[in-house]
Image (cartoon, rainbow, N blue to C red):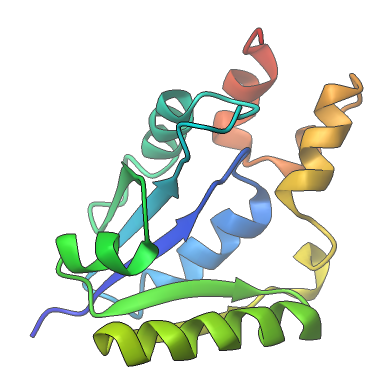
Length: 158
């Protein structure tokens, strides 16, 4: 059986912490699908199609990695993708408690296992909300965005 995982999130924007989790997880799975969840009722910072484009570009040389957008429950997306794992990055104890509860409900609903990777220490304080705030207030968030997509993200006119 192929080991297929989804890595769900809004990735608005995709940070070096997200990138690090994917690069480390590639070796655990046969296929890794970065699932960009979106809610048509919410106003995103960057359009979901741009995020799909940028993240696809970032991993264009990684054939095991693909990017897709989805709406609705993460477990429904996982089932649609024939995924048997949901990958999540854990930065803090609070993240773990939150993710543990979701993982247990997901497992009870579908049997899909969640796999947690701890962030590397240097990426622990980085999250999309903070990076968005830096960008929104015209600060330099370049060191928190993967180099390959930095110019695309910074050059995008909102």
